[in-house]
Length: 358
Image (cartoon, rainbow, N blue to C red; front, top):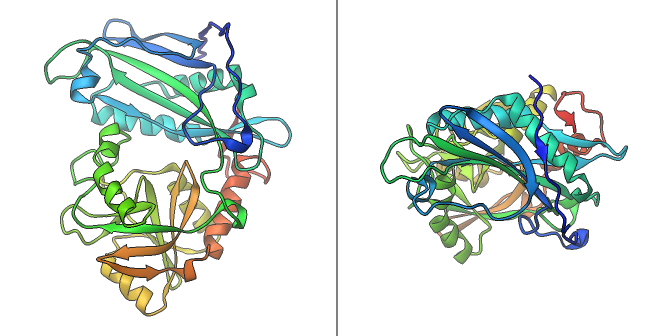
């Protein structure tokens, strides 16, 4: 099905930020996409309008009961001038898995992708081309029906905004440097049967307290343990976690408590293509510590849209420091970053079929 959207262009374009001083999530482009949902019309009136505030009734359901979701992906400027999206079909599929869990009406996957493409085309001159930069794309859906009462809303808004962003990390090694991670035992991110697999704001709001603890301990992020036994590693901050122990690369299985990351899936596919021993299995923090003591813990890294690959140089657990790879970026972490970023930016051939031209 072909989709078309009305476009109202801004009459007051904003000055574009300095590409050398882009801060993640601080600057926003001139336009945004909005679409409404009602039970009688379904998703309708898709439109691109000047970026600005959204009017919201004080009784809007999202403000009281948190019925909302969001996604995140990026657009990149390739050397040949093309604008590339990275696996937007996966974001569309994950959107509907989240929507189903939160009783939000599904969005046609083609509509989701075409709305993103249309908006990126309108604001294509906002895409930075400096190495390490990109255009971050934030689709989100929320219940804007005014009512007080716990039941699914009958009216929603689907919105997309864009933000030019710089490299998530600064430093050497191709934009990578190692982070220090706090192993959290008091708080948990998600429990079986909950919303851990869904991309919902509540998951992130609930993580802030643990993040504060990590920051006080001098750490950049939190390593979450499972909610039942406080024993098995699950995610690092808002990213998926990988551990290289001996000749085995281990990541948590998708059992409903962790986000099915698109970068995670991409990494797993690359590792299998390279003939490496990737295992999706439960891994206890005790096994990680034992491997470190025996010299078998070679690398730890997180994967996600924002940083692509985030190497870990140190774990802080019960006041004890576990150093990983002498706090240096590992060979596998660097290779994965170079390959994924190269595909995303069109600098190396995409033989995986992951990119889509706008």
